[in-house]
Image (cartoon, rainbow, N blue to C red):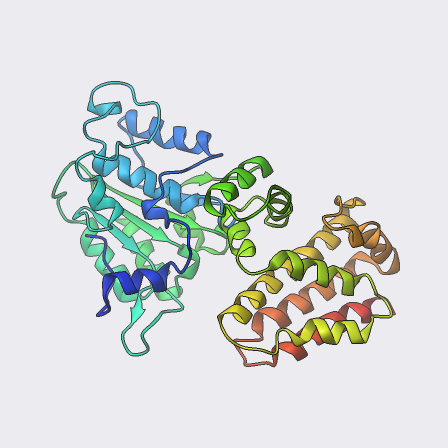
Length: 376
């Protein structure tokens, strides 16, 4: 069955794994915007030559894991519908009452393995990396005989969280692929995986969702978000419904407006305004942590857009009024290589602040001052 080593109650563990209000991928039947990828999996299966390992790649939060679970559900609980089961299946959809579906949705199907970060029994927290011992359990699982049907299916979510030992253990499984077993590997950054892992998988690349799809899903999963807010969140999330939902729940629209208001005072920088903006990150607690994560994403994304615009000689349409003409003015004040250097420095400061226990407020101040130095 889909398992992870833990002594915690299953419900408590799931809350640690998935601390969100919207459905986790293993219970989510909604998948929009990836019809071509779904059809590729369906065609591979109905051909009778299903590859033993798939690398499902693309930006975070666009539905990669949901697609992997949708395919696992089809292989493990779709025996009575379409494809090789009698008839021509048009999608990977599985009826709610299909035999075995409830087991897949509960991650308790005997022919299913979910490889992910598990609970550290010593700390009671989810591990930062996928443990190599869990990968060894996966290797034993893959070579077992299917218990309920034709297939055994394993989902790795996400491969980016494997350390070198875990990655090498997965590679060993790929080098000796068992029969009637499929490994679905979800990755946000395939270029960081071992080349030998990539070469042994069939790659399925998913693209960011369109704004219309993101706003549609926002209206379903976050009905309190207005249509106007949904449009802004869709643009800020760059086609990621997962990111849009996270931003919706952390006051990120106000945070973004305040961030841009500070950026608009460059190169002089309104220090009183900057200190007021940075002060909100001096606090601790879950709300403050959510705001900090949002700032990491929003600041990095904004600077990335600035660098991209400098390279292409283009300016993205403003999301808030204060952005109008701002990026063009900043690009004219410094060269592309200097802006890229500032982006890298600021991104490194923000991303490493918690890891090396830097003061968050001081980190924000230093990040904005790094941009100011570029223009002088």
